[in-house]
Length: 198
Image (cartoon, rainbow, N blue to C red; front, side, top):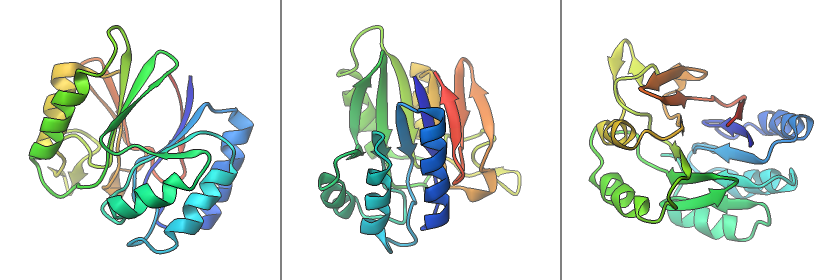
């Protein structure tokens, strides 16, 4: 399965054009946007429409710049864009586990409770791709001035479950960063996108 992952594009229509061209050129199966595709919700509907027009299935989360309820309503109108906050998607032998928003606290009890329940829905033998807006704590994805600022709750989940891949963002300083926790590959794809083959 080939994924085009991106995060934190903050309203750049020119970046969306480049993402669309890359998605078509690489013949990706999914585009995954891990949040903050707007600047405080501005042009949200137009941005979702542009993603929808690409014609490739898009998995979209909200970041700290978008409202969950608005995202659900706008994505429901789209043909190719699915808003998957607190949801899972079974796809080609993998399961996307998606959790948007946040990014400003090291502990997230809501994520912990959701992840525990969501794991009960993951079919046995399926590999997990975790998509979150906030990055896991203590990795190359969450450093600000050499200090970790990510989520300990997400890190704990990664250590326990060992998903195949983690896609997250939020901290722009780390766009393009890659790291590992045990066998789990973690990336912040940045706004320009990153092709991932899993």
